[in-house]
Image (cartoon, rainbow, N blue to C red; front, side, top):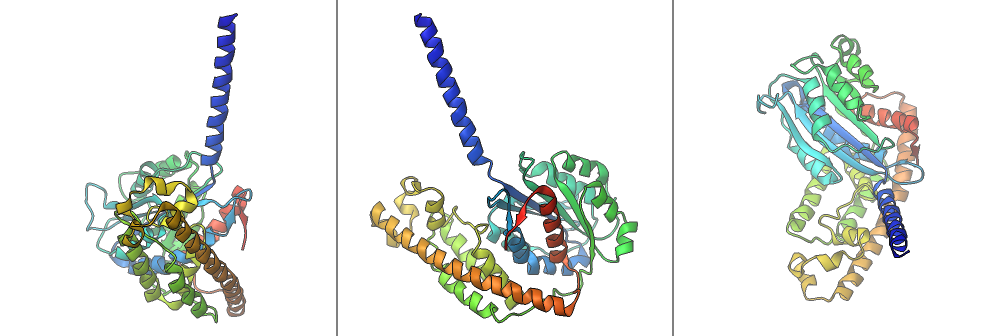
Length: 376
């Protein structure tokens, strides 16, 4: 009888543990949107890189409109460059610039650091590397996309592009191709074949065209919010100060491209996709209410080191409330701004296609196919 009771108790414990594990898995299985951008950085691609710099925040804002079953997905972006003679020949002239990351300022930093040089463009090889090297989600409901942009023949190199793409599709990663040049030439050079094989979209763009921005009456008001928004961040940790400084640098990089692009970045900073819990105390505590207990005093800013945990929590709560108020203000202005852009675009008719428009169009198409909803 005692043995029977013992076995019964053990079964109950095991069932309880399994249930708890199931619960934790549900928490971890929040929806994700993972996007790898593979950019040709050979000599002829300066315009492509400029378009990527000009459209990064616009792409982030498009991704931020997506919901899956009412939930806001986590957005991760990775960046590769290929076709650059300055890279190692052993790597196939390919470099993983960043892993899949939620650190959007890091993506911006690395994107603005890209330079062009040379080269041999091995599309199959870079697709294969992105497929194998990045930490792609195993959840079939997550949206996983590769965008490869460049020119020249798609079948260069020792890696068969169709085999590389089959490897991507085995992980439910859809491959999209963006040819920098004439539409029909891109078809002849097998860029459409690559998109067809990857169940993705084929686009062609003129990479030498400058991105056409529409300036709105709301841009200045949105960017004026940015100075107030930046003051709500509290750095911590060994890299905190540098990360906070980089935030300002990326503001300036966006501003260099245009005032409209700067406004797009500020709008991105008002979205949940823009999170900095690795260095900002406000985001960290909002993610984990007990986070302060694991942060050493010396990791805090000097002005907080002599304060009690209760006092620090009060300051964080104040900053969090300030940030939420500013973000709501930006959100309202952003909707008015987008309505203005939509109206002006309709008047002007079809504009020039660029990298951002190509990526945004396919993101919305995939969202519809994969059961994501667009909320503006």
